[in-house]
Length: 282
Length: 354
Ligand SMILES: Nc1ncnc2c1ncn2[C@@H]1O[C@H](COP(=O)(O)OP(=O)(O)O)[C@@H](O)[C@H]1O
Ligand SMILES: [Mg+2]
Image (tube, chains in turn yellow, green):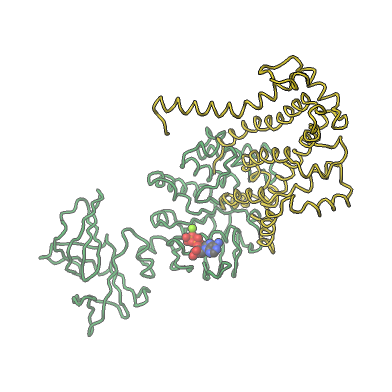
């Protein structure tokens, strides 16, 4: 450990506190703004303490519908975004763990070719292939559907490579012990590989959920209907160039609501992480 | 209840390494067969071919009279104990032992009965709810054994199961494995590079070298009549003393020119005798035995019950075992003798003659 002297400790803590303030203050300020009326917000300076419009603002946004995004309530946006983020996170994990399983534990023709093909797709993120993908989605009639939001971004070379690296650390003896114990490929996957991958899955889930939650470009293209928008897209739409047209108090509420689910996921998964980390062993 | 028959078994790994070059071994029912040899000689490969974890390039492996070449490990009815135990880290001891039975669709109460019985035998009863990481090395080893025993297979396969234990525990487990194997009466194949383990455990000892069987038989027979210099130097610790001889007119001389008359059989080129068969007397006396080599003590290694003298004689290193505390000190001149019936002779190629 560095810093055993009290002075060093004080300095270290001071730095941490300053850091936290810098990160937290804008969020706090957003929260404060979300509890005031539009008039208060538009008339500077904005107070530093929360106002009395908390319930009113939040219920208006959540259930009443917001004008600039076509009268859709924010609760609908939250549901859309949750479905998309969960779909992307779970889909990516399922697909990548299965591909990594095939690549590491099975000997099939062109195995390395497939591995490199997957690897090469790292160089083709959504942005690069966005026009052809959009055309495919249109042809398949998947515009304004959850499938259209999720499927095109569901394959993940990164996650596949991560799982592959992890699988390669599993001792060959363990695999052989399972074979001798009569575990076929499916049982081995279910009884041994999945439980051993718990921590990796939890970590990836957090990362991929947030990745899905913050998607912007693809949802912007593939959704036209207001009630299919995600919260990030809606936030952007709610802001007009003219201050007077923008319902800032509702924008602030939506911003607050937009960061809650990722925080919840991190907090829930963090406990899982720690449990997983403590139990991890080879 | 099973015999294991290997007929001219070969293994060529992809990439061309020929790890096993034609091995034939017939292991009788209930016998414990030990494969011993230096690292890389193909012991594990052979064992893994019996297990079905490695394909067989040529020849046949039969268990209980049935050729199993094309049969997977689960259907061969074998159980294996791995060097690093290979316990499932996320499962409790109980589940580690029960897993194989569950996969075979045994009834829950039968599994429970068998796991508890086996745990009883191995004194694992109080550990059933623990996970592998909460166990000591010795306990993990026991669980690995338990996982094999609980299945009640036709054949046990062990791949250096004791090599991760400390010396004392290794000695204990060696005795225990032998007793268990006897009482369960399960045919076993045991791989080790440790000659002491090999000697003490084996009913049938197979000494392997570079993918081939160097000698096969009863351990004491092998100790008393090693078929080659390789076996002679591998079995027995410290190893047999081996001295190169050159043929004079009709007597033998050592490579450095020293002449010592010995009655050697025809074709012999290498003389061998074991440290425990050697006798050392002070340099001015003559040993009773036929051989009498002048030697100088280089080092003395006291073990307690016995001491080993490391001497140099005729240009070679000779080890002599003396009982108890050694009186000789480094620099002493000695004469080393060995009874003529305790001498071993090998030809130019290292094969036993006589
Ligand atoms: N999977 C493999 N692929 C290629 N060569 C191998 C493989 N496994 C073992 N070998 C080689 O086969 C030989 C015998 O190995 P092994 O049976 O593990 O020896 P031992 O158990 O006696 O130490 C060695 O030369 C080793 O390098
Ligand atoms: Mg080995």
